Amino acid sequence: MLERVLPLCLLLASNVFMTFAWYGHLKYKSAPLVVAILASWGIAFFEYSLMVPANRIGSAVYSVVQLKTIQEILTLLVFAGFSTWYLGQPLKWNHYAAFALIVGAAFLMFYEP
Image 1 (cartoon, rainbow, N blue to C red):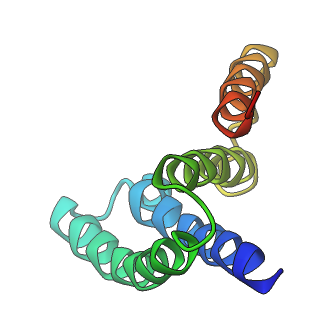
Image 2: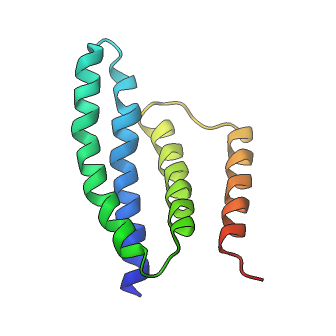
Image 3: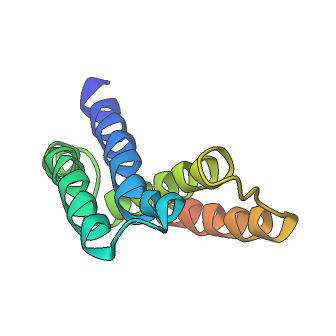
Protein backbone atom coordinates (compact mmCIF):
# COMPACT_ATOMS: atom_id res chain seq x y z
CA MET A 1 0.00 0.00 0.00
CA LEU A 2 2.76 2.46 0.96
CA GLU A 3 4.58 1.81 -2.32
CA ARG A 4 1.45 2.97 -4.19
CA VAL A 5 0.63 5.99 -1.98
CA LEU A 6 4.10 7.40 -1.27
CA PRO A 7 4.82 8.30 -4.93
CA LEU A 8 1.45 10.08 -5.12
CA CYS A 9 2.23 12.13 -2.01
CA LEU A 10 5.69 13.01 -3.30
CA LEU A 11 4.27 13.95 -6.71
CA LEU A 12 1.62 16.12 -5.07
CA ALA A 13 4.20 17.94 -2.95
CA SER A 14 6.54 18.39 -5.92
CA ASN A 15 3.71 19.90 -7.94
CA VAL A 16 3.02 22.44 -5.22
CA PHE A 17 6.66 23.57 -5.39
CA MET A 18 6.71 23.62 -9.18
CA THR A 19 3.49 25.59 -9.43
CA PHE A 20 4.97 28.24 -7.15
CA ALA A 21 8.21 28.16 -9.16
CA TRP A 22 6.41 28.65 -12.47
CA TYR A 23 3.57 30.97 -11.50
CA GLY A 24 4.21 32.40 -8.03
CA HIS A 25 6.20 35.33 -9.37
CA LEU A 26 3.13 36.57 -11.28
CA LYS A 27 1.87 38.02 -8.01
CA TYR A 28 5.03 40.16 -7.85
CA LYS A 29 5.31 41.56 -11.35
CA SER A 30 7.21 44.61 -10.11
CA ALA A 31 10.16 42.43 -9.04
CA PRO A 32 13.02 42.34 -11.54
CA LEU A 33 12.86 39.40 -13.95
CA VAL A 34 16.26 38.10 -12.86
CA VAL A 35 14.98 37.90 -9.25
CA ALA A 36 11.93 35.96 -10.42
CA ILE A 37 14.13 33.56 -12.39
CA LEU A 38 16.54 32.95 -9.52
CA ALA A 39 13.70 32.50 -7.02
CA SER A 40 12.00 30.07 -9.40
CA TRP A 41 15.18 28.05 -9.78
CA GLY A 42 15.57 27.89 -6.02
CA ILE A 43 12.01 26.65 -5.58
CA ALA A 44 12.40 24.17 -8.45
CA PHE A 45 15.29 22.51 -6.59
CA PHE A 46 12.82 21.30 -3.98
CA GLU A 47 10.43 20.16 -6.71
CA TYR A 48 13.16 18.00 -8.23
CA SER A 49 14.14 16.71 -4.79
CA LEU A 50 10.63 15.27 -4.50
CA MET A 51 9.90 14.40 -8.15
CA VAL A 52 12.96 12.20 -8.70
CA PRO A 53 12.30 9.92 -5.71
CA ALA A 54 8.59 9.85 -6.56
CA ASN A 55 9.36 8.53 -10.02
CA ARG A 56 12.03 6.13 -8.81
CA ILE A 57 9.81 4.66 -6.08
CA GLY A 58 6.67 4.81 -8.22
CA SER A 59 8.25 2.98 -11.15
CA ALA A 60 8.18 -0.18 -9.04
CA VAL A 61 4.36 -0.24 -9.12
CA TYR A 62 3.33 2.09 -11.96
CA SER A 63 4.42 2.26 -15.58
CA VAL A 64 6.24 5.39 -16.67
CA VAL A 65 3.19 6.40 -18.71
CA GLN A 66 0.97 5.99 -15.64
CA LEU A 67 3.38 8.04 -13.50
CA LYS A 68 3.37 10.85 -16.04
CA THR A 69 -0.41 10.77 -16.22
CA ILE A 70 -0.69 10.91 -12.42
CA GLN A 71 1.73 13.82 -12.41
CA GLU A 72 -0.29 15.73 -15.00
CA ILE A 73 -3.58 15.22 -13.16
CA LEU A 74 -2.00 16.36 -9.90
CA THR A 75 -0.54 19.36 -11.72
CA LEU A 76 -4.01 20.37 -12.88
CA LEU A 77 -5.51 19.94 -9.42
CA VAL A 78 -2.74 21.93 -7.75
CA PHE A 79 -2.89 24.61 -10.43
CA ALA A 80 -6.67 24.95 -10.14
CA GLY A 81 -6.38 25.59 -6.40
CA PHE A 82 -3.35 27.84 -6.82
CA SER A 83 -5.00 29.93 -9.53
CA THR A 84 -8.03 30.58 -7.37
CA TRP A 85 -6.42 30.85 -3.95
CA TYR A 86 -3.06 32.52 -4.64
CA LEU A 87 -3.59 34.45 -7.87
CA GLY A 88 -7.28 35.23 -7.36
CA GLN A 89 -8.22 33.94 -10.82
CA PRO A 90 -11.10 31.50 -10.35
CA LEU A 91 -11.77 28.84 -12.93
CA LYS A 92 -14.72 29.06 -15.31
CA TRP A 93 -17.06 26.31 -16.52
CA ASN A 94 -15.01 25.69 -19.66
CA HIS A 95 -11.85 25.14 -17.58
CA TYR A 96 -13.66 22.53 -15.51
CA ALA A 97 -14.97 20.90 -18.70
CA ALA A 98 -11.46 20.77 -20.17
CA PHE A 99 -10.09 19.28 -16.94
CA ALA A 100 -12.85 16.66 -17.00
CA LEU A 101 -11.81 15.62 -20.50
CA ILE A 102 -8.21 15.30 -19.35
CA VAL A 103 -9.34 13.15 -16.41
CA GLY A 104 -11.23 11.00 -18.92
CA ALA A 105 -8.03 10.61 -20.91
CA ALA A 106 -6.20 9.65 -17.72
CA PHE A 107 -8.82 6.98 -17.05
CA LEU A 108 -7.95 5.45 -20.41
CA MET A 109 -4.28 5.33 -19.41
CA PHE A 110 -5.14 3.06 -16.49
CA TYR A 111 -7.93 1.08 -18.12
CA GLU A 112 -6.99 -2.46 -19.03
CA PRO A 113 -9.68 -4.26 -21.09
